[in-house]
Length: 160
Image (tube, rainbow, N blue to C red):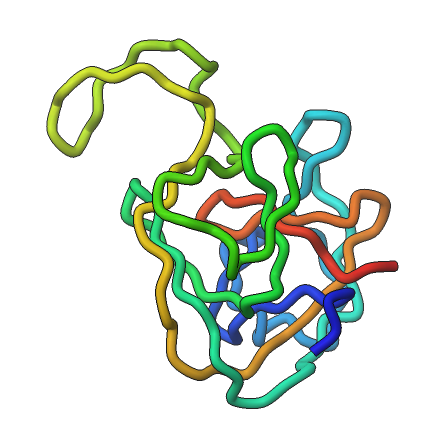
C-alpha cells in the first residue's frame, strides 16, 4: 500500500459537523471534517473518501483516556509538536497532538480517579497492538491535508 495514502479501518470515526461518523459511511461523499489550520481547530472539506483495500491487517491504538481507534500501519499521526509518525512506529507513552486539551502545565482533577494532575497538552498512547482485519479507506482534506479522528487525534490525509 502506498505511503502517500492515509489508511483508516472502515469503523474508525472522523469528526464532522453532523457528529462522529464511521469513515465507511462517508465514502463517495464530500463533507466537512475537523482539521487544524494555523493552530486552530476548523472544519474543511473532506473529499475523495474511498476504499483502497479489503480485509487488511490494522492496528488498534488505545489512548490513556480509554478511547481507541483502528488504522493501517502506514497511517501518519501527529505526535506532540506536529512530528509525523507512522502508526506502526508509535509506542505506549507517546504524546499525540489533540483536538482540544488543557494548556500545558494546567492542574486539573481527573474524572476517572479524582486525583489531580498537570496537563501536558497531549493525548497519551496506552497501547498499540494488532487490531484484526478491516477494509481500509483513504481521504483527502482541502487546504490543511490533515483531519481529526473522533478520539481527538490529528492524522495526515492522503497526499495531494
